[in-house]
Length: 358
Ligand code: SF4
Image 1 (cartoon, helix red, strand yellow):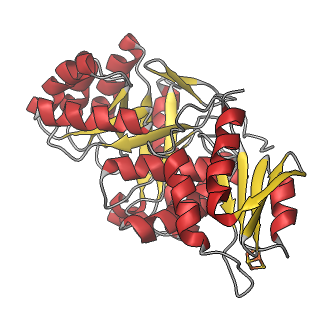
Image 2 (cartoon, rainbow, N blue to C red):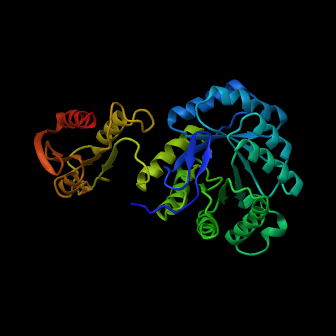
Image 3 (cartoon, rainbow, N blue to C red):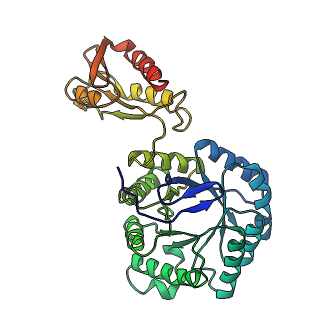
């Protein structure tokens, strides 16, 4: 069981983050926000995939105004991402944004920040201060290790919020470099008790990006650090949600349906295991990790031979270990039946279905 870093709780719409609240999943739209039908349609797809908080970029007055109509159509909290122009933040808050994200690198005038603080305070809207290594000021960038610079830049910016007695804050420190990201969050964890939004920025295309995000976000989650996550991918935003679910599930932070463990196969393998595992995974995880008809989380082992297979199958809730032309089916550590290999998957699936409904 991961011991979470103690934080204060922040409410974003009807989602609570920090403290012992579940680590929530975020993503970001890539539509023009002012194109309301396209933005709403993408958010609805994200919701269906399991996104719990969505961010939209607000780069024009039209985008800021659109927040109101979008908010009415969707069922998850909406975060307005603001750069450079504090007036866009004011308009987005007025139009019902549930959280504002600003970057210390590009809204710097204290009177502008004060106006944003006042508007957010008045409406109970939290602010995420998100430092990105790529948007540090030139003078700050040359002053030491990137992780130290990110943390000191953030602390300097937060000081203004502290003086204004505004502490409804969420923090992020993202770099495209995994080590810098992890070190920055670890350093920052000793400096404040605000919830952290985790991410490795600009992680890249789906496969490479998931590896980077898994290492970065996964390491921090295992340290107990992190209260919301976004897996930044150059891919459809729904992919980010699926990846986030897999990361949270892999570190044991949250469960999303059944978990399948499968052997990598070797020369001892008695069946063509890959299509079998794919078939089981597809049947169980058809809707982006939302398990059909399952009320509980099962650990399911699918193993290719009788050498190492039985050990893993015994340790799982339900499992199968193939032998020559046969499959031994396990439930709660015991073989409950041995069947011909050609009907073994069907048998396993009927047991999983019965178990899942209990
Ligand atoms: S379970 Fe058997 S087939 Fe699978 S990798 Fe291990 S030894 Fe090889």
